[in-house]
Structures are given as C-alpha cells and as structure tokens.
Length: 397
Image: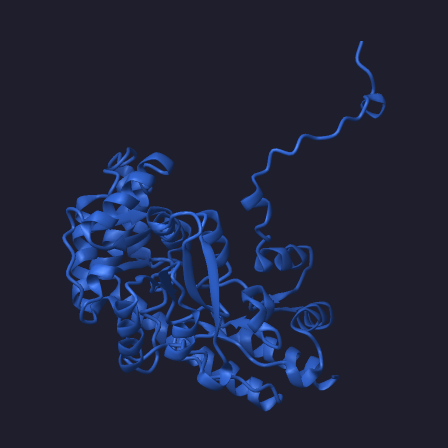
C-alpha cells in the first residue's frame, strides 16, 4: 500500500551543498532572461551571441566530418592538425610562437580554458586580480578554484581601461595572477600597446601570472589588437585564451583553446583529461576550416558590427543617454543615470513597457550600477526598432 504524496511524513532535506558553491550567485544575465523567455514580441539586446549563422563552409566541414565517420575521441590536447592551425594563426595575428605539440590545448570554449587555467595554478587563498565591470563568470570561476577574487574598478571617464595605479594598489603578498579581458565584455574597452606595456611591467615586477581572455580580439574597430603575451618577458608568464564563438559565429560548437608554456599546458591538460577528456571532434574539424578559410567571413561580420555600433551609439546620444564609444567586442554600455532609475529598474521597465531586453549593468559587478549592457549582435532593422522603443521609454522619464 502506498500513501498519497500529501500524507507522506516530511523530513528535513539533508544539505549536501559545498560551502564555496552555495556562496556563488546565479548569473545575473540568465536570471534576467528567464523573464524574457516568457514574453512575446521582445527584441533582445541582451545575449552576447552573434546573430549570424555559422558560415556555410564551416558547417559543411562539420557535416563532411560526420559523413567520413569522424565520431570518436581525439587526443586530450586536441586534433594535431587543429593545434597546428592554432599555432599558425596566433603567430600570424598576435606575433606569438607556440609549439603545437605541447603548448596548445583545445578546450570546450574559452569558459573551460579559464576554469582549467585557474584550477591549474591556484592554491587555496591565492588572489586573482581582475577588472570590473567584467564578464559574469570571472569572480565565480576564481571562487570555484578556491582562489580569492580581487576586483579593480574601471571608470567611464577612463574609457573603462585598467589603470596601472589601480592595479598596483590591489597587489598584496597573496596576489598570484591578473585576469584580463580586452576588448572587454560588457564595455567594449580596449588597451593600447603602450598601456599594456605599463601593465606588463607591473606583472613582471610582482611576479604575477597573466590569464588573458582575448575572445573578442578580432572584433577591434580602431587600433590593431595587441596581446599582452607578445610583450617582452610576458610569454613565459601568460596563459593566452581564445576561441571561435565570437569572431566566427560558432557559439554552439563550443570550441576554444589555450596557449602557454608547456608546463602550464601540461597542468591544464591533466585536469582536462579527467573532467572533459577532449573537445568534440566534429567541432574541432569545423574549427580547422574556420582558421584556414574563415578570415573573409570574419571581416564581413566585423564590418556589420561596426555599422550597428555606430547606429545604436548615435541613437543613445540622441535620446540623452551618454555612451562611451567602444573600440571592440559587440556591446554598448550606456549610462542611464539621467533617468533616475537603477540599472535593474530601467531594464525591467524597458522590457515590460517597450518589449526591449537589455542587461542591468550590475550583472557585471557593482561598478555597473547606472549602466545597462546592449548587444548589437542583432540585425540592423531590429536595432532601429529597439532604438525607437527605447527613446519612447527614456522620453517618459
């Protein structure tokens, strides 16, 4: 005989959750878009995903791989031919030389690469300095690796750049690494070579490892991108992270890579081989095609992003929302302080009243209060409609 569910005696659910996991907040982006998904007719400027479909020749490479029965495991490090293409690509585009045999690791997106890097180098309590507003996963990823996240605020009046004096002030005897992301999500900020030189000098002086997430580096609109790993004395103390999601519109393929001196790659690989084993072979085959023949597609998409940025930037300024002009990535970070609303209230009000979704700036750290993130990885005609709706909303404040 089975008792009805309602009559089964209730017992207290045991708490098995680890303390460091319990302390991690849910993603501010994902929580907000739970609301968006329940609504119809919404124009989303929220998710950082290209609206372009992966170019056909890259998709065709994946299809052809399947047709040839490419369905098994690869080396833990990844397909050798992909690692060779990665080494060639970063040498040609970033002036970085890596041995594909033992200094390149193919990962499941940059997200896994970052996780591996942090877990490979951090001892409990080691401090990792990072700049914010920043991508939502940085602080939680540090915490999951049992490190201590140390945020350095960047300001609009400084074009959201990491200032050397602010970095110096954050360094303590427990500082182990600096985590960089330029061009930056959510601000689109960049660092010039001269500015990176100053940051690099501090890292050498204080023996800091640098983990540099350069996923948006191809989407630089003004100056040529410089990697901090290419500066004197930095290759040996830098883990270079990159991938295919943004520049080649391959978000769903989930393939990225890490380049670093062999001892660091070996340490990361030892974690990778037990947690993941290898990135999907079909994605790796597609990535080979992207690196060999995808440059023209990337340049065409970048030009479209530039046009969209200019349209939306002009619209924000016309509606009285001051906005820093981003030099990279595909985000705008307008100030909404003049409306008198908090970032959260502005985003919720805009969504409910005008069916336009943006992300509250606070999702990217406390320094994001007073701002919202707007992705312009959205079709031009949709951006025009979204801008008109936003202007109506702002005009009522």
